[in-house]
Image (cartoon, rainbow, N blue to C red; front, side, top):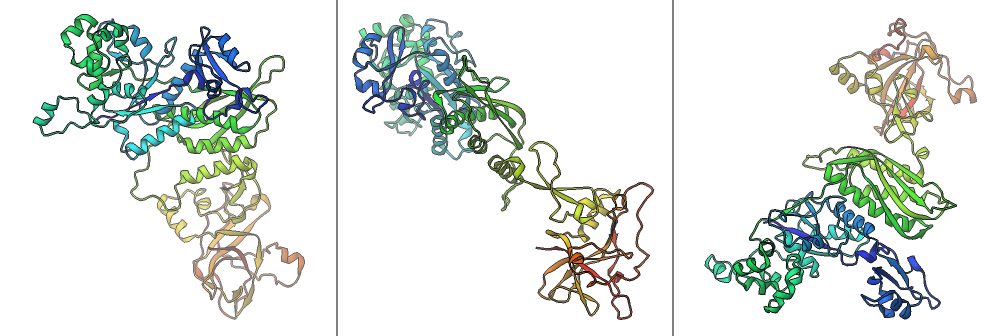
Length: 619
């Protein structure tokens, strides 16, 4: 069964000047008594829309300018802005494209003028981007959501999400659900109804196939609507009223041949399309190639709450634009436009770059909120502009059966983006690998541009994994995997190695340490006067805590803070072994680090006593 949703914007002429997310006093302030000042929208000198305060003051539709000022002398009068209405109307349709690509704008003011055209000319309903009529008497939007119900969790969940999107756009909307697009538009204009039963058959036919015709059937609900609701019938309302035809149900009872002869085939076919008896044809909305949208604010804003509300509207449109093109944004620009004139200022740019391409509005809104909170305004803001400066094809969703318990890598990158937006990009550091065998130089803390290369920062903390060793060598993938398996790295690396005591020829740190891994020999750094010649082991204490320790080779002494404070407490190492690998000086690169075996440590009383240092802790 196909299902359509219809959206009608009844207060569009007024809400383009005063959106629903703005207060009654944001545009025109209050009077001496503290009451909101009335607001009225005029077209050709007559009122076409008014605020609640204006209605309470006695302003009525069709009243002239002089009458408005008579009953409400402090009323603010605005001329109707058709361009702003068309932009808001199309913006809502663009935001709805995040739920379905089949969205159509219905300009029924134009359809009523073309009621006398041939069926072939009036077959496709809707307008494309930027082709709205001069006057939008009934701003309607229809969308086919049949294929989106399962994706968004059913009818009720999808309707809640659509209503939240419309609320964020700042416009009052009436929603309806119906089996046909024309019926959904008619029911939305009538006040918003939900009809899920598609039956439009006579009761005798329903009984013959065993189906009961319910009171909520489509034909019964549509039959109660007034005749002028159908745009093709507006040109013939007077003649049809003279025949006693007041509703669509009355129109259905008239002879079809007589209606075609008097009113043309367009009226009959429009009624058949609404009831599902004829095929519907809609001209789907096409999106622009570049996203560059602007949202005018109802008043000069000097705080971020009103600016963020306008940015929320634009983010909803951006999400629909990305979903319709199956793109993801990686960088966008938020421009805060100031007043023009003698004291004109250039727009305040807020550029936001993302480490992970995304098309979800929730993450984008969090980044915008944090950046706005850190932005200082030099002047009042009158409009917000959003530009998508870098996009790329969206990656498909993961098809894994079970989600990762600690979150996906994309979730981690979004967290980094949020922290950078809140604390500043220079205050959030990441650990980066370096091409160096020496553990204390194998990684660095530095800031990373969201889409760029890492920038080096402070000293290394955490021990780099074996990637830093394997990546520089010319080993096969299998050999790299074997080395990575036998060369563990601690989760935390000390800034300065800690000298260890030896008892019974074994290193001591709280208790005697037992070597539980083969030795890993690292000889590197001859080119920068920071030579290291060490044998690293994983040692385990009596409480099963694991440490990363090393023994210095070739008579070299590790420079520690303890050496400076307590000179002479640590003996110089004796003559070291000479069977280790040498540094490859011919190509100017360090030699490959490889295990030296457990027998590298003499374990007899007659051997020279080794001197050990603690360099890292395992989790």
